[in-house]
Image (cartoon, rainbow, N blue to C red; front, side, top):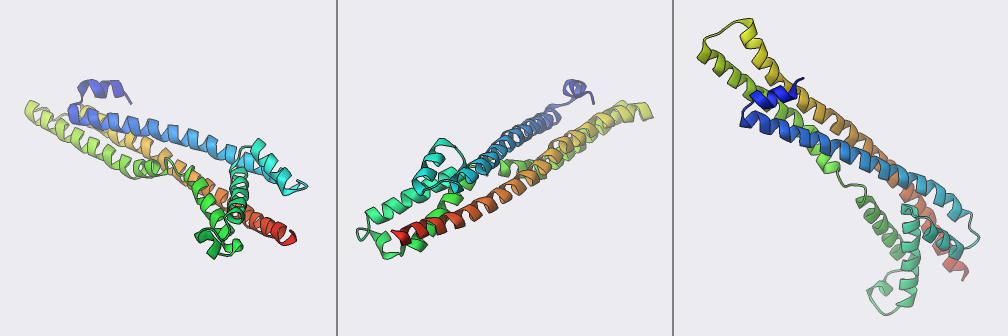
Amino acid sequence: MDLLHVFKQGDFVLITAFIILIIMSLATWTVMIVRTIKLRRAKAGNAQVKELIWNAKSLDEAVKIAREHESPMSDMLLDAVKTDETFHRNKDANLASGVPFGPYLLRQIQYSISQIMRRFDGGLTALASIGSSAPFIGLFGTVWGIHKALLNIGQSGQVSIAAVAGPIGEALIATAVGLFAAIPAVLAYNFLVRGNKTLLQDLNAFGHDLHAQILNKKDKE
């Protein structure tokens, strides 16, 4: 595909379609690489800190570990401990006092999970939009290019295969570029959504254990 030739020969509409598709393709690969690295780091950090936390001899030691190792599970533990301290420090002083500690802690853990997961949703909407719209932008560029090619052929009066094949072949490049932008976007979207789903499952399981651990600590006090 000689994109340079297309830019030289194409009109404003066709060139605009190509520029949009190129921007979409660059955005797709940027989001895919950045989000994949972030997701893998989060999962690796969770795997490391989870083992360290549950091997800690006390909750205070677990908090210290969480502060030294950055990960979503570390953030969850610190938020849960902060919730514990806030609830019992402000007991009978505000609206939270009307809710038992167990449900209150569970609610805050779920809120913490939702806030953490928001960090990993960035770019997914863009990938979904690119995956669904890029083929149509490419098709529009192709239709427009064929339309212009047929007009030029009609004006010149040349109906040979050589006169038809060249301009139409150049117009079809737009469809190929649209697919080149859309296919990685769809694959990246599915991969990241699946990765976020497994991360959410890990956080929910950790949150359940964390909830039970803090309640058990309070029952012993």
